[in-house]
Image: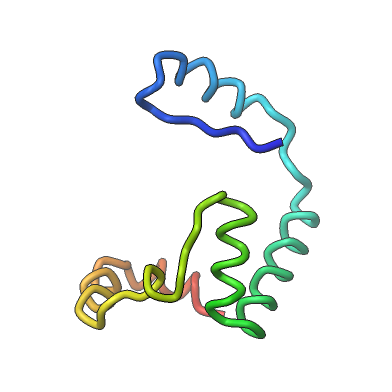
Length: 90
């Protein structure tokens, strides 16, 4: 069951500690889920991102709100360390 936390909530610390205490998924389960998500995005592109965001984040995206300008992309990419970039490349 999803748990939604906001640092502005007065009981945030209690909720956050409860989240940290929850059972974690096994690494194999996580690997399988991530592999399936990546496969969906590769196969379906933006449509998959929109569907997955709706499913996991309960947030509605559109192709218009999903887009970033080339300047925004360049600016944010410049912030990523070489080590982190290498870890993200598939």
